[in-house]
Every structure is written in structure tokens, then in C-alpha cells.
Amino acid sequence: MSVHVLSEMAVLMRREPVQGAMSRWQSHRWLLADVVPHEESFGREPRCLRHTDDESLWLYPGWRLELFTDDAEGYWLNATSPTPCYFVMWRMVDKEDGSEPVAEPQAVSLSYHDAGRWMDAQETVETVPVPPEVVTCLQDFSTQHFVPEEKKRQRPQSFMRLTDRFGQPASVSTDSQRKGSRGPR
Image 1 (cartoon, rainbow, N blue to C red):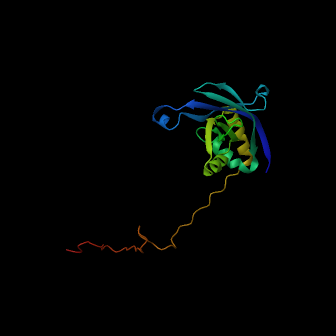
Image 2: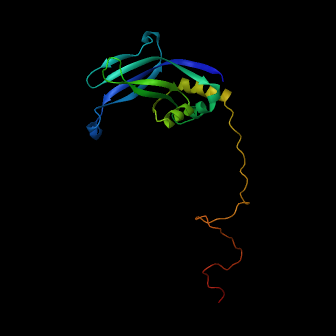
Image 3: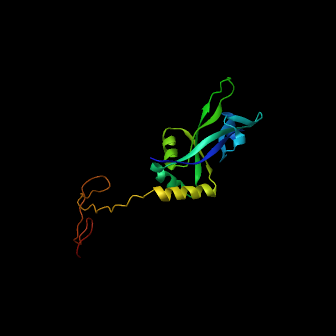
């Protein structure tokens, strides 16, 4: 397994008020706002960029976007999908000062396989579209490292017993008389 570091990213998470009938159970919700290229001015520590009673915007810098040769199929699936995207897995984390919990990214990936594993584990996974230059890198990487499996011809299953839709043995007849027909006149 070889690792190729594509770039370093920053994740933006937003807290916003819930509208409509859902607001009876939950006043606010967290969601993935964006994934942007990391800049040195972001620093290395997560920080709140904006906070009001209704909204918060948090920046989580320094996420390495890595491509692994053994997961080339997952990148190929993403690159060839109608909307290629970043997959961000995040969790609600209690703050040390005891204030309201915040949404914190746990992983960022471009692989369909990673996202599928996270969702199978009941994690929260959200997506945002990737820019065209990242799609190009994904396509190049998957072309270089992904070899599709050769489709095997499925042999006819003529050796299997015929059954009806209830699993009972069935037979095929070639004579002209059928069950329920009147016969010759």
C-alpha cells in the first residue's frame, strides 16, 4: 500500500437554527459547511470564526487528503459519479469548559469505500462537491492504480431443477395439451 498526499484541507462546520416542525425537538443542528484548501494563516488549532445566538461557524484546519493505492476503486467510483465529492465524517464532542458540544470532523476522504464503512458504523457522514482540479487528480490516480476486475461469464444454470415461485418442483411440457384446455372438438 502506497500513500499519495494530494493536499491539505480545512473543514468548516456550521451550527444553524432548525426551521419548521422539527424545531419542536431540536433548536439547532450542525452541518458540514465546506472543505477548502488549507492556508498557513489558518493555523493548526480549531477555532470559532463566528458565533451568534443563532449561528456558529468553526474552522478545523490541517486535514491531510491522502490517496491510497489499495483503495483506487473507491476513488474511481467517486471520480466517475455524477457529483464527485469530499466525504467528511464528524461527531458531536463535548468541550472541556463544559459549554455546548460542537461538531468536530474525525476524517476526510475522497473514497466511496471509506464513506461506506463509516455509514455502516452508524457515523455521521456529509458531502460537499470537489472542484474540477481535484476530480482530475482523482481520475489520474485511479487510472494509474485501479484495474477493474474482468467480468466472468455466468454459465447457464440448466443443471438446476426448475421450481415455481413457491419453490415447488415444476415441469415444462412440449405437447399441445395444457392443463384446463378442452382438447379436440
